[in-house]
Length: 88
Image (cartoon, rainbow, N blue to C red; front, side):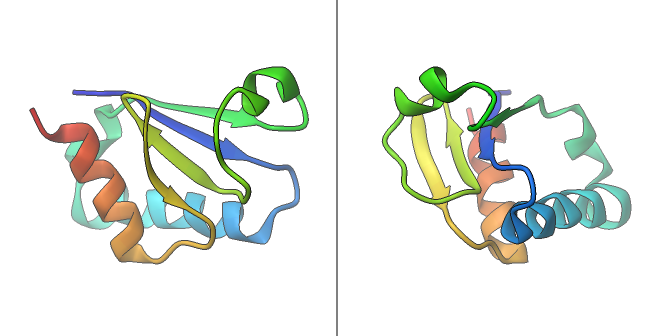
């Protein structure tokens, strides 16, 4: 299992929606996803670290250093991120 690295920004409506999708999917459909490690990085707090990655919009997801998704998310986008984290 790989760690999901998620860049967010305080007050971002798309980040809030992504977190809601995480909650809905892990609670109702995929409880096994609760064990997937997610490191959330607020780009305003860890600015230097965030700037070392190539992205322009939040939320942005990386799995093993590979950008999986950037920008507004749908349920399918979040499922794709978790699938990438769980593949061998």
